[in-house]
Length: 351
Ligand SMILES: NC(=O)c1ccc[n+]([C@@H]2O[C@H](COP(=O)([O-])OP(=O)(O)OC[C@H]3O[C@@H](n4cnc5c(N)ncnc54)[C@H](O)[C@@H]3O)[C@@H](O)[C@H]2O)c1
Ligand SMILES: N[C@H](C(=O)O)[C@H](O)COP(=O)(O)O
Image (cartoon, rainbow, N blue to C red; front, side, top):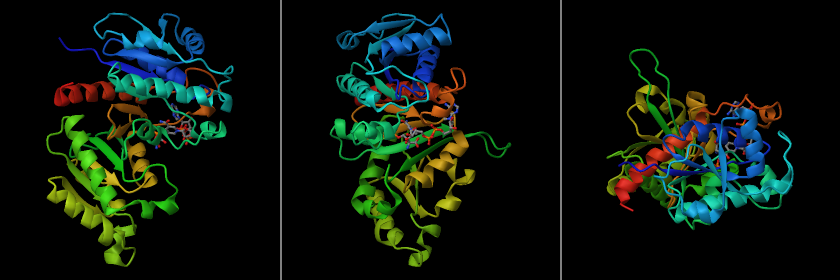
């Protein structure tokens, strides 16, 4: 019998669209996964009743969450209560609630490491508010790495592209990043032969074990315009990226490049690749989001657990206007991708 995956969903910044899309996503996916929301029960219950009174939420405590049986049938959504400090006003950020957002992540991480949860799906957080609460925070990606004591992780976003006529059918686009939330002035210094080699190896390993791709093909961008123009527009391609690719190929990783980023993102190259490795956040993500926004999924590779997220932020501007404006398509994709990855991982790693 196929096991129903238990998916923890952290509901994110309470003043944003996270709670709404988490409820809608969990409710829609409840026949194929066992969703467990982690957030403020009273607030989620209030929202659920406004979204649709047929939605059933059931409060459970952390200990109960540890004993959830995936075969147990419950036609609703479990919630691990993680009470907020102060009342929520949609669209209005309140640093007093920042610590609760991190508490919900800690519950999810602990549960996933104990294998009580098969995967974690995170709704968006407002990074600035957590910092305003006095806690340095650059993103889930870095937080998860720190909390799981993982030295190197890789941010990858993935989504389906639309068909472009008969010649080019839709295909899965995956874009991974060599650096994550880093000021642009620090990017070059952060890219080394060692870090690139490690990143390529994580991508290769996770595409095999968590996506079931037998022999992943990775295309790598340059850092500079025109991939450095033979050294006339920068030396990182010659000094760092090419030697790293050489090493990776010797280790059996199917990686090619460095390619000029401006011309690599064409369907005829992308449709035959399993992943593009871009050098920094705004080199790769605008292309991915342009092609797949609303259906994209953010995935953290290299962790000792499965974590996916949506492809968008807190959307305070629409949260403020009321329920029913947020698109929860990316949340659905994030939940389904997490379930699929958990299944591949279980089969390949044999827990
Ligand atoms: N996974 C995450 O936690 C995550 C991801 C991206 C951004 N963020 C954070 O979110 C905050 C706001 O970021 P931003 O303003 O750059 O991006 P944003 O995605 O929140 O908003 C950009 C625009 O897209 C719209 N939008 C976003 N998601 C939508 C949805 N599901 N349905 C309909 N419209 C939607 C918004 O209304 C807004 O006009 C920042 O603090 C950022 O760091 C978090
Ligand atoms: N870089 C992500 C994006 O643009 O969608 C986003 O900021 C989320 O990052 P974390 O998953 O690290 O929070």
